[in-house]
Image (tube, rainbow, N blue to C red; front, side):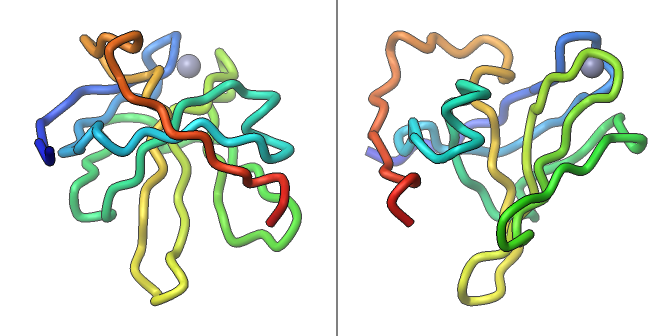
Length: 118
Ligand SMILES: [Zn+2]
């Protein structure tokens, strides 16, 4: 079932705030080097679905091939989203689903993704 809804999301201190149209039927738990440390649940949306309301002065963390911008709040340290580019060139946003408001995390079907083996 595909169901796109509009969610609001933020970091802990509120410096970062965004609105996004997302389908949370495709939530991923990844075991790559950064995801296992951050504990984020991920959902991916096209950049057009994502509206950053505040949070211009974010810290941009990059590693490995440096294709993903792991944006995090310099005040509270929460990484509420990341910016990336799909192999076909489309700009994508990786949402930290744990940062979305009003989502029942226990009700989500979480698919495991073996990012550590990439
Ligand atoms: Zn913050």
